[in-house]
Length: 584
Image (cartoon, rainbow, N blue to C red):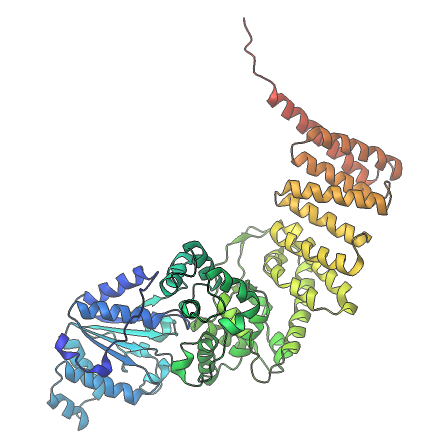
């Protein structure tokens, strides 16, 4: 069998470095290649995940074990593929008489070829980069019909690499091997292989994590770091430089990007190949939808946030719900967006609430954000997003508990809205964030609430000054959020600062000052400083009775807090007493 694979044009590419983090996938491919059943295996995933490298390593292993290995690079030409597979079948012993039957019309060429491939064992055929599977034929059918050039019927292994990971494309008899980004440790190993003098294992892993474990990006960084003329020669320096020079280091353009084989090897262009294909296939909303997602934060986005109205406002392109659904499904099919599993939450009526969400790989997010699609204005897109965010926040804060899951997902996307708002609209935008923070407080989403409270405080301090009553109120809210997160000492320190400033700015008897004193007392109680908390609650109660009256709600709150902290202090005191045996 090995002698059959002598044509240099079908030789698998050499693997230049160790394949890291793919042991499980390589074991699966080895099992399929060495089994007696043959079949079809599809290595799939978005651009840059190392599908070709994995297939080349598997092909090399098969070749070393005596298999006849043939490598075919898909060129979006079914006729060329027919020629290649026919030639391979001839190398594997296809009789001239059967080929003549096909040429004379007594048999179909594709059936004649697969008849031979089903009769001979010990071969591995790799079809690399079949990213336009509809063009395989016949008649534009998907490969899942198993009537074209890709079939699971061979006695050897047919291995396909592709960006199309849909089961519907490849059919029920295909073994799908989906690739995911590498772990931080495996990413670090890739970088250390390329540039062993650039730093420690830990520093390499940190850079690998920053690059999202995308093998193409790791290769780009590794080659850069190994170059003695590069400006940055260490993993740490390169990682720091990515904050301001991502477009030059990882997202750089290539002058020959129009060539697909070049584009596949360049981070800036590899995803564009998929988007161009989707546009050609009729998914005209795929590119603008992905660009809008890239303008948001690098965090999950509620699926309900993406509406035809948003697409229309951002791009001026008419959009329907069906078209948008199809575009998002196509982006998912090509691995450009992911839909992570959403933990179930209980609704008030006992039914599980599930919320669809969309997330981009970090490198996809950064690369897509670099360039607006043709005819799309970045400023217009930001304006549409900000308007839609504000409207969505209004809707979910009015929805009560039903809006809580969406509120949690929207929180990371709100701070940029505050930064982009001009001074004339800053108050309105600040109130949008404050309303969402209050909803998150009700939902018990302390981490998300803290994020927004900190952003609001930064904005208030810059716009109003540190001593403005609104700024002091925001600081008090942030201190409370820290307490809910369990960061009690930080919360108490911030409450003490706020109390001191409110006493100075508003006076010791102002209701806001009394609120700060009450909240500081609660924070001290959470730290276990019960006697100090009780004393402060007693002082606050006395002042509130005098200033607000004994029946005011805030006064009743102080009274209840005092009772609670005294009871807690008493229990704590009893636990500290030494146990003494009572003698008879």
